[in-house]
Length: 387
Image 1 (cartoon, rainbow, N blue to C red):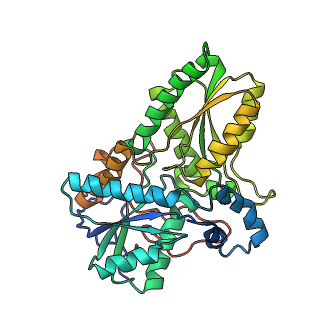
Image 2: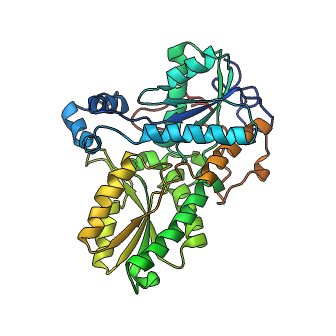
Image 3: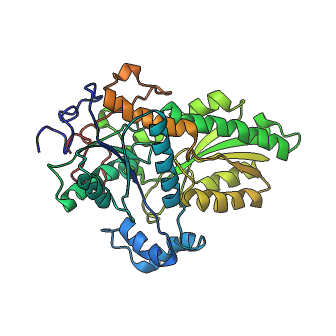
């Protein structure tokens, strides 16, 4: 391994914040979380997700019932098949000859399978897109570590070079679908709740996955001074502000968290979405728009935690609630992902890269000490300066 960045192309090997040297890539690797595709897959999948933590099966079954309620099938794999097809169509439309290879962190097809497929096809320089927009251990660092692990597992380190597109929380392609969704959601509230006064009787909740508070604090580079919520909270808040400025119509809003899974003694980011809905109901709110701003597609955390639990909580408090779509395969989102690849292919300077908040454009190569997992420490990772 040469250079400061593990398995990087020459343009990224010394770890610049933004790579301005053009790089010819051979293929795109679409990297996702993965999910079960049948009842027999559910527990093995959850064991993969929690490996190394010593969680017994009886505790995993507490989460398994979310999947079992949907036949043991997570929507995420089909959504990634759709996204892969949409990316391929966009590449063909632009006459760009880059194959898209899909691999998951926690279920078939695994990242190691994707790397073997790439190597067998003769590809050597890969650009990765992770289906996660924000900075944290779980939403960025673990993807980078799992790529390094897949290289070690396959014996392909030294053969394959892998770069990764920047975190795209504030890329217009990711943000535009939410702006559109909030505008449509508020219009729907007017229809479903005749006479509602949006400024006083409606509320917008931006929902994202909760993470341990200490992991949040360590998200992003330590020298940026993001405070207790780290880059993770700061990025979400910045994007929510942009969305509301564009489409919020003066409606009050909050950032809320969902899907916590840690022990009760461990602090996680709050407030919980259901707790906040209950408070809003007590305050006389009649209409609610729920925006899954932390998610790129309608996978289980959206279908269960929001479409099932949060909407039930809203109904219990006599609130009419509308859930905004995730980007999915929205045209702007698909175009934006290809634009992120072309930034690296063409070596576009940071000043010419689109970003709708003052926090971006984010780094091409993660900075030293970025997004540490407090319990596990740092593991080898691609696309970042050690540790």
